[in-house]
Image 1 (spheres, rainbow, N blue to C red):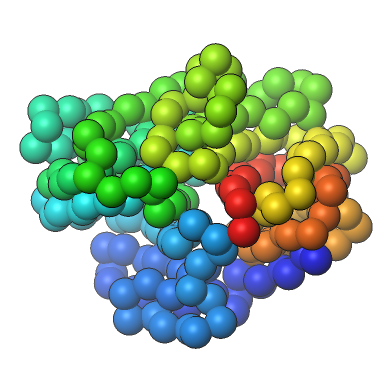
Image 2: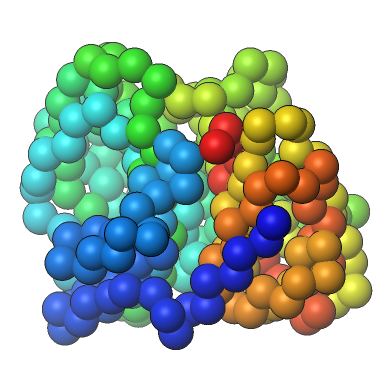
Length: 235
């Protein structure tokens, strides 16, 4: 099953400095049919105006992964962490027993991010933050694991999260294919950050969501140059 959720059907809000679209119910957007995908609770598509951002606010017991599509985001938290994550790279924040953080666009251009929330395997874990640069292109259709709590992924250099899930990305040129294997009981949610693809022959346009389950594999083929972000997890 591949359920495509066109960008135009997503919930959203326009706060002036922040333009947000929600793949799942969030804040004032409530759709009982879109409450999450397994432990994937939030996938927000945010555009943050230059010189603005999210003031300090608390979180707990959530794995929060930020993939930067354009511009950069600067993080600061009460644990003493501070860092700038630029386009194509990723940061993670394991909120655990509690953390207060702020996220600002200190650039002179609009910053565009995917913010992904995954419910952790256990509550009250030690909070932490991390960020990492990843290859902008592999040239072979490979899928890069960006952040993961799956067994065996730590050796790949992925940022650790406290959930049996993985956040991945692939960059494909037109006509190029990447294949994601899905074990029984595993599923995926996929969004092209740029460009468009087909998944097992089903068209998925820029910033559409594709919920994938009961498939042994997802064959992702670029119908134009594309950058794709994927979450793999049990459903």
